[in-house]
Image (cartoon, rainbow, N blue to C red; front, side, top):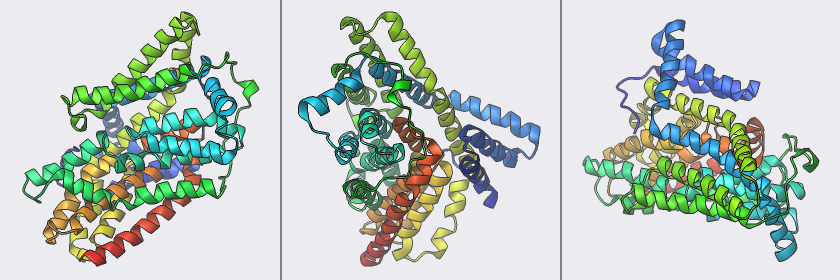
Length: 464
């Protein structure tokens, strides 16, 4: 839960995320853009250049002192190790051979894209894992059949967070249940948190539309502009003969590890488990088990395994740096009161029928500006629930509709933002340039958001 903010800095509170987003799009240097965004936030807070620079350093150090941040960064780095172990051991080659030669399941570009799509639907434990597995497994096939990396990144991104919010038997569900439950415990609303969330998910319009539009682009053969150069196979280090199990083992351990650690950290209840601890434990377990498996099968020598782990980790260091600065942007926007500034006037100007649509817009802007859906949920859920209750909607269908508006708006803003960790990871999994991914998926995300806004307006008037 973000720290409480008793005041905001008005329009100035919007500057850090806007600076980061605009500079990232113009310069294509995401790390520098994020740094300048964070620095500008502390400059607003401190008022002096030297003090702002010092506070920026302190803020970054404070983030590295938080366990969930460190675990997330380690997860990102060692995912690169897993991908490299899979590639060098012949896991991807084995999968391609299995699909194309044995089962003959993937024989066209459409089928290769559908493979990525259905992987995205099937894996809903954690959005980053969904994108990583869909991109890693599908990329050799989509490359072979001519799908642009930008479209693959869109498929990975648009079936990650939306699916996780529709099937919330994961850390996403734990967060949402906790936020709703806190409002029930505080006496703001009444009822069951699980029942309210289940009802709200029926109105999670952006998630449904995002998934539907992905399927539409696949079935209609719509491709995206190819802005990312794709390396030819001859320029990549050679792999050995294919081994399907070299791909299955690390992915299976990763997925099962997340479930196991969610149970462990939640004392038997996965909905109460720690998402960051679970993915941290799972990725380390996957690296260790994969290394032992490759040694046992004599697929790779110990020195080769160590080199693959280090080489894979090194490729992810820039991604980890981007994630750290993305977290820092979210942290400084909390200190500036960006979320409360966007929402403090809404109660006075909105008719009850317009409440869900207004909450959706506020949540979308907040998530786009901060790059975090979870942070947006934490900021906007208490605001939305309080506003709904204040309008006498605590027992009416308008309450779950308002909760759904927070979820949909948060996922859209996070999906569309170039400083979002899920956007970054989807681009990485597809081997796509980050800004190219943002530019090419934005029209589709905006279309889904526009349709969602219309639906929130229609249902808002229908339920009042």
